[in-house]
Length: 370
Image (spheres, helix red, strand yellow):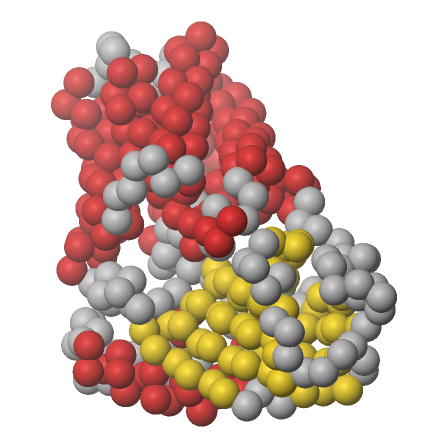
């Protein structure tokens, strides 16, 4: 009786899990960049927030109609400019320096761009603190890139609310690069990749829709391998700027892939043939979604390094994906030994996959806030 009782709870647990995912945006919007350039007599800083992140500070949709017009963005830029002097705190030799010039505007991608200029003389110690991270939602990350006057990247750090400061020790006898700065490491982007797949509810739901109808280990490995190869290809070409597709197209297409998988499960029945080709094709689309994280963090822009972030982030995604599969697949295979699961709950779960994908599709096409 106990196993049967637990089994009857399965659909409610699935509904709860999907309900939580449905209330969450499929990709973490908490990404921003801060580019700090060390000029001869000043420190120039440019901070870029995605529109969703800027909306945590000021109201973007003034009339509440679900769309953000250019006039509303202009009004939001004026409001943000009042806060711009407090975006970054700069200390030279322990003394805070107030910015003399500040500006704010929204670019062609509707991202908020905040520019600050800090006057300076000679100094040997530079401390930069990202003040706005404390105002962002938990998990917001900022890639801070420190550059010399020529635009050469000296170091990069991923900051968050718990680690929002970078300290730079300069050689007093040379105007060269900082002597003691911790660069962004392989592990920083690896952890980001793991976190991204674990909170990427759309990617996970796509895989669930594929794996729930697999009967054996071999089919599961083939699907996961095809998905991995495909999204690794497009993650690389997009990050290297060889192919560029707007997220306004990619995000709805990812949602559409989830709908397709759910419907195909219902129409073709259990264990449809040739799934690896479908997985590879849709995996190419999902790879562009993964690439948006690195692009939003400015990886590859202004001469910043690409190899370490690309390899470590992708490896993190793969490891996170394998961990999820290792936890989910034994449960699926165990449940598939019950005829009632295959006959009733696989179609029910597939229908939920399609419905949630349709919800995301509508949200991203008509209510994306752009």
